[in-house]
Length: 192
Image (cartoon, rainbow, N blue to C red; front, side, top):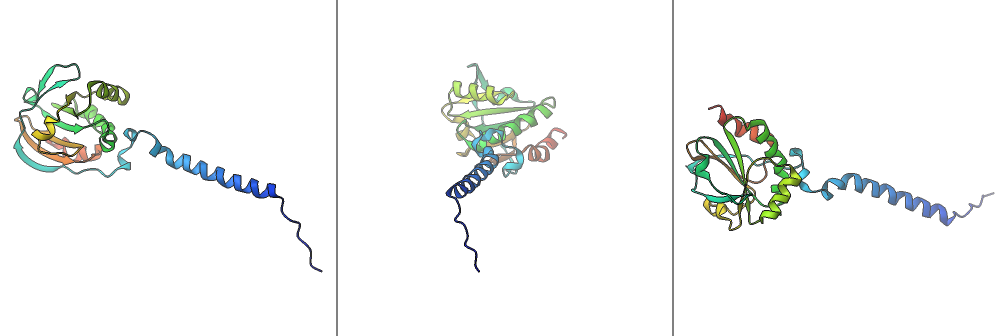
């Protein structure tokens, strides 16, 4: 004799469906949280790092303003190594590399070295808000007319250039860079 199965209660099916949805939501929240957060908190393992290329040309004569409205110029920094980073607040790779640049700056600021962030097209208020939120301590310059991009002959963000104490650009790259690549390619210049 064959036994007749009792029909399943619709509540069991609903409960199983809800359990699956909750598991899927939990997975999405756990794995999608990084994408939902500001990409400025991205670690170096989360993006492909640019690799600097060796170059040799004179640094442009660039004059802008700092966040307080004071005039500043690249020539004012002669005698030290300068990493110029062209960036913008709306640029995801720019935001992603900021913690990397800050960490590198903190590790090497006592070695005749400075990073200058040059914000392309952002307002003073936007840059001040970004710097405060991110805890950036290296100097930021304002470039509402994007003069730095033209001076360095690029239209890509982020783009970075290392200038030696004599005013020659020694390294250049386009794209976000990790602290590891900065240590590998930029830090050795300070020991020369």
